[in-house]
Length: 77
Image 1 (cartoon, rainbow, N blue to C red):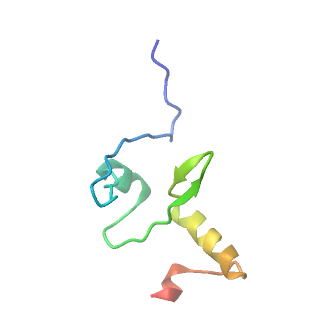
Image 2: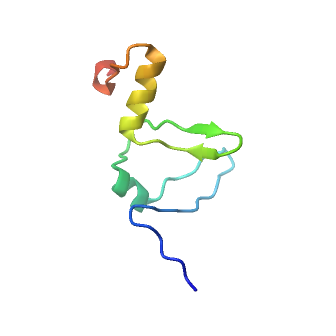
């Protein structure tokens, strides 16, 4: 029996190239608003794996790391 995928949940597979690079699938880029020239944050946990957090989560993480929680990407352009 085929298990139904919960709404808003996605999975894609990608191949890692010789230089360790991979392409984020077009559908994923469209769904998550990732555009050419954007910077994404790749985070990892030895037990849980790799993740690319949303832009909002990236900004919160960077804000926490900067110590004031007020980081905005446009301030650093």
